[in-house]
Image (cartoon, rainbow, N blue to C red; front, side, top):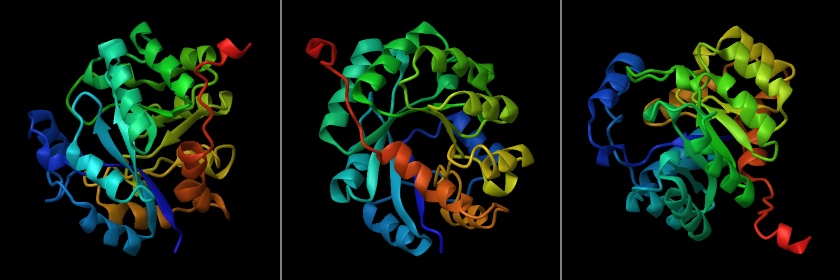
Length: 279
């Protein structure tokens, strides 16, 4: 059984308000099951991870609403769970200081930003302090791309907005999240162009991967695409089994489900604060 790392899970959906847009995502878009609005405990998920061959998982938590529920996971089993910190770039330095404080005190492997939540594209200057801070901390950043499931404007998540960002912040470890539908061609071309840009398949069932993504994974993108589920929005077992059934060339499945994530999110980090003072 090919082991896996899941780079996007949610453990406190039951603590979230059942907003209309989340209900629409569950019912109309993802066809979510009964666990969609559930919160979980580490003791529930660890046996499931063992059964499915999931070695590690990234737990989502917002920095402006720190969740004691989510922190229990990384405090109880830091070798299995790490934080992905959701950041609102519009909160500017206050949000970044909160992010840095959490990252210094809890196992953290990335920051996360969701452009559709503010309808501001990631090419906007309000994001630049976040990019700078992530470079300074050598902290990977995920940015949602592709049309979002909620019935909101989605042009802000066109991957082309990352073109200038990759030029201006070549040191930024950047990963597109939630796929890139319907702009797969743009996403793959950008990944070919920029060494620091990757893509994770969170919230996108593997059996629905488009042929052009599979071709990219089998060729020039074997080191670029990273497995993730968005559990419980998408069922863990479904995502893992569908991923293992993909028509991939020898060695590609290992990279997709495990190696790429371990290198990108858990690779050696070299924070750069104070670097200029040493010159």
